[in-house]
Image (cartoon, rainbow, N blue to C red; front, top):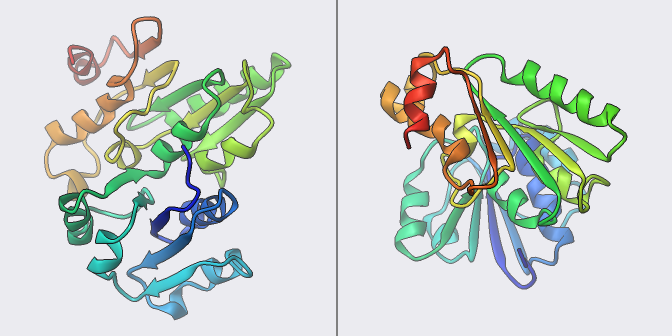
Length: 236
């Protein structure tokens, strides 16, 4: 994805937002605006992480016009749906998740393995990453795991043909995806969680099932056959 000359808004300034902002600047975005609902005195880590990086700050709330005038809005996973996001989409602005941006910037021949589920996804991701690394092939392991957002994989040695990119992904991340395609997508289980964000179990399960939504016939979908909610998502 070519970011050169674009106006990019990065929403949420935890580790993911910091990494995305730095990435967009490196990739030649014309303007990068970082915005967070927290006040400035609660964002010391973000200030440190973006020290010397040419970004424009909007904190303590969000400005609708900033969203509607952007070319691209990138959401951090911890940020819920905002009225400004809705306004941006109504204005024709693309609003995507950080993992969607990362996916679009990965080498098309790098191999993406994505793992989600209510429980077990971190352990499964860590074990998968260790197995991949033991194979001797260049491997990135991150996403929702530790302090390695998936956007960091783009400039990692694993982002080459045949490189292995292992990512833990959460429902929050999949919510704002539009083409995120894993060569292998794993759904460990679905149990009640995050209803404050998604409202119903049906909506939450739908977000988990997105791990497979953009796969092709030659990709691999791995489902927990002992979990009825997971198997319901395999039906599409």
